[in-house]
View (cartoon, protein in one colour):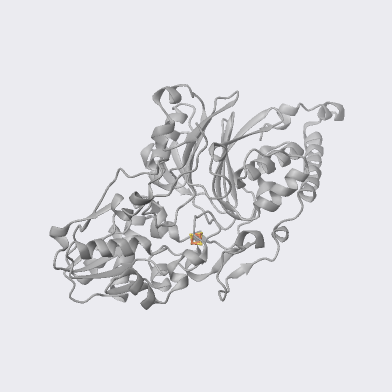
Length: 535
Ligand code: SF4
């Protein structure tokens, strides 16, 4: 397929998760087909490209392309991918180029072993690591942070002779939010950043068969039972030898992305026993208590993401809830560039009001969030044109004021309406009769107890951000927490870590020699393949 850049929908005014990941160890099933359906369930997390890699016991094959999962894979493609293990990826993509080369899973060679890596998140120190690897003579095919992670894993595995050691040492160097799945010919690996910023859950398919995925909705679709979250800093390895878990790096203060609860995750996905639907319903109830509209005739949502909160808002105040906007469900990302004239259709490509429902009424319109405000402005105008007497806008999350650096496509601060205007200025810009946001405290009270990243609402960044990453992202006068002056401060040298890996490996070999009683000469001729088998 020709490399091309995707256009953003004219009405696109949301934060976007960068990716969804899926991994399955299921020798008695059809892992490629399971990965396909897992990715179908995760399609909302990325529509730019899709890919699946399978390991069949001898090698790893990958198929990936630009487009939706259904556009990339045919029945024949899946039939040609038998295996024991599969990983899948759907990408939105902001870090690096947006062409075919950036589609995942990313294939890499470690001597004669092929690995495939799929990544959700952003590595904030990847440019410094990439520059260092290039200086060491390691070539790159893309400008993505995911390729940097794959190359580092390869580099350390070659020195330590164990894939899980290579992964653990790579995790020592990576900064940012990440959830990754990795397949080799005979094993599945899954690991997550030490703050647990990006989500990753574990499910069981049957005896000795396992699934990992960004969200539980992907477990449901393949019939897997939810077991638990992959712990921050944990490395999981699943193979014919069974399930093995170890702490790749020590956990740091938990900083689960709170925006997963607001918008990214599907409402039918579950966290700590509670569905995101229920959490959003409660956000709507809390919003109603904090920002009521007394005597409104009707509560409507901006479908679909605002619906659970709108239902909660109406229920809390005892107001009627109805459908005031119809969503065109067949609008998807496209290679077709709209002309300037078509651009002016704006949000109508996606949403159309129901005049019979809204005419003459005092409407409360609830959305999950307001990012740039451009969509809200158009919808309010559409409702007025359709005859609404009043339009009161409510956001079921606080004002988005700060950019995200951990895997979300947030505009720089100058594009965030909340960073540029007062509440009254925003109300005036959007054209609503009144405007209200859920408070940060209210949001925290509606999600399961735990540690959260709330940086896009508070500017309190849990992972230090190198200068190269935040440069020109903040407006003057804003003082975010946890900035660094240099991108080089964020990690120790690759060579330094490599020396430690080699020392660890040599020490391990000495222990193995003592244990096995095998003479030194034979140990020294340990075959490369055996030395890299990942155990
Ligand atoms: S800054 Fe916002 S979107 Fe980014 S990880 Fe933190 S909570 Fe999530």
